[in-house]
Image (tube, rainbow, N blue to C red; front, side):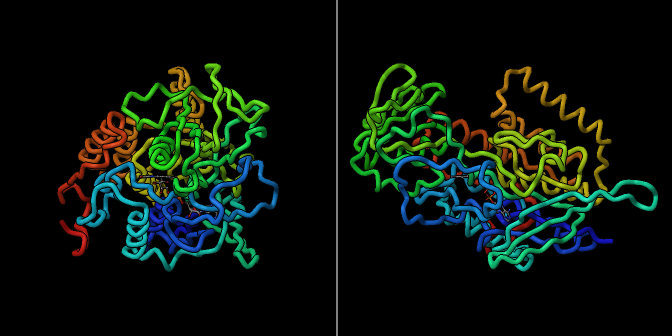
Amino acid sequence: MSVRVAVVGAGAAGLCAARHLLSKPGTFCTPVVFESGTSVGGTWVYEELDEPIREKGVEPEGPERPEGHSRYRSHSSMYQNLRTNLPKEVMAFPDFPFELHLNSFLPHHEVLRYLQKYCDHFDVGPHVRFNTAVERVRPVVMETTDGKQRTEWEVTSSERSGSERTERFDAVFVCSGHYSVPHVPEIPGLQHFRGSVLHSHSYRRPEPFSGQTVLVLGARNSGIDICMELSTVAEQVFLSHRTPRLSFPLPPNVSQTESIDRILEDGTVALQDGRVLKADSLLLCTGYIFTFPFLHESDLGIDMQRDFVGPLYRHIMSPGFPSLFFIGLCQQICPFPHFHCQVQFCVAVLEGAVSLPSAPVMQQECRAWLEKRLSRGVQQRHLLRMEHEQWEYCASLSAEAGFKPLTPAIRSLFEEVWRRRREHPLQYRESNYRLTEEHWERAPSAGQRE
Ligand code: FAD
């Protein structure tokens, strides 16, 4: 009997899941891809905001949202001038290169166009149910005639019109993304801040900050990029962070400061080194949190926190339910190639081509991994950061599941760019890179050939 699969989300991960499921029509029924938005592409769908700056206060969004809150995503976190932080040669799915004529570092609309082409090329579109949000995914455990246990998944979805539907599937790919619910740090006295407070999730362009003094909190990818573009219009930008002091030259109107301690009653900002600053706007580039409002921890035997989900065997599946797959939870990875490997591993699990250890053995492996990370002093919020471990991880998935491993060229190019970004974060996008055709998994179609 063909396996019935639901995919939650039609961003890069969901499209990748559907593409690989569709490649095995003998094994899988055509998947149902649920997408709460109106188009494919997820993060890469740029949305204008009418009022980009909210007056004061950032409403915390997240699991504490009131019951019954719509599962429809508010807006994507893409800003107008974003260029990719990975070159297209590394960023692409290994079986579908970007067009050759494009530069290595791309504006967001080119990535969206690429994902739309991927969707068309693999004929995923007809299987996406747009404007349809998954409200609940629930395991139904049944006993088979030979006394074994078998899990089916009850997926309840709602259309924008309000109509609700519950269907049964044999497996679910959770590809709902994790860059749309802002992490808003506790800042004592935030209510006293007199200017506007905004999370990078709602930042679109620098112009509204012209002539202002802006305090940017957080100096990871978005923090640095946004700080640089603000410096072209703002009077002064303070880049406040707790990471080691950035050693590259910053524009003259950008100063690095300690992290924020609190907001004082007069609306000024007290820093952790005792300095006090006055700013017109506070821009929180403080990252995002995990939320899976359609899943219940108690159903699945896993802990779903804002910054960690586990135990998950291979960072993908609950040992008790190896037919519910989380794609793309890991951080500091090369996302599309990583999804490509995780998805193929899951497909092989469903086909029976990977024989999983027993649930207790999977639990034990997860525990050992966690203990090792914690004993190395890794903080909880960094547990899922992979960095250089991602390559061995992807290689082990491909070895076990028998699909083609990522070419070593992807790793070496990724690491070169990573290094250049650390050393020259303002210039690293100026170079173009090249991978030869032999590095692609299969010959691309005529229009995309080198
Ligand atoms: P998403 O793109 O978030 O897609 C999830 C989809 O699921 C969405 O369409 C959403 O509407 C849908 N969905 C969610 N919940 C439900 C539900 N309950 N029911 C139905 N549908 C649902 N990566 C790179 O490789 N290179 C870069 O340069 C890069 N830059 C980035 C810059 C920014 C500002 C951000 C935020 C991320 C960036 N990333 C980059 C990471 C990027 O998010 C990933 O590459 C990738 O696009 C994530 O895909 P996804 O499918 O996991 O999630």
